[in-house]
Amino acid sequence: MAIHLLLSLGLHQDRLEVGVFSPDFDKKVESYKKDYAAAVKEVKALKKFIPEVNTAKEKKITDRRVASLKKETARLKTKSKALLKQGQALYKVITDYEQQQVLSFESQYGSISEALTLISYRDYLTRLDNYLTENHYSKDAKADIIDLNSERMLNAREESSERLGDTRGKMFLLIYAGKFEEANELFMYAKDTIVVEENARLDALYTKIIERYMKK
Image (cartoon, rainbow, N blue to C red; front, side, top):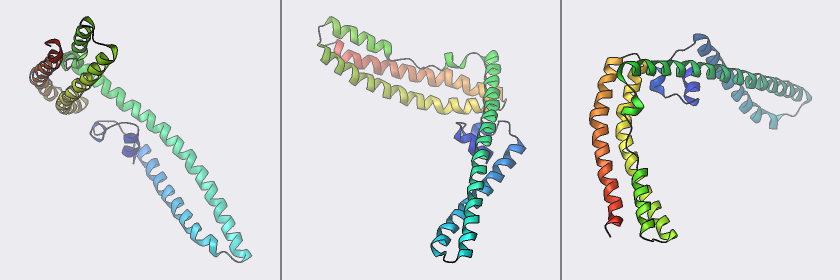
């Protein structure tokens, strides 16, 4: 249950395998789950029972059950808030740990962000924009051309990011687990193969797109 709460806070299942957990937190969440399920069951039972209440005795019983349920609902609400707060603290422990692992890895093997950055299409769009301006394209025509081709370039970059992202994700999980040598093998593959190939593909595509207009 602790895992489910942490997932809701933004941690992927695989990342949690190398995280730090509190047995006490697990027990509290499991207890909350059972109490919540019991409260839901009582609500359903009361919905069926209330329409059948006829006698004063049955009404008293119903009133006591409703009052008890209200009290339990308030308790569960308070407990839920406390668990969320504790879960957020645990989330910070995990993310701080991961950040420290990344810094340790980078101190040995170099910056990940610098090595695994795909080329931006902004410079290509700037070249195209300058060309359109110099050749007196209207404001609307220029805007249409830029919008159309920026979307094409963005989609192409996202495709490259997906290919890189698979390897990058596996690399980070190894880093979090302290398996730096294995992580470095993926790091070198991503840097020397995937990034090189994808940047070459993107450069060729971006150039082809803008030259359709610049050669007219």
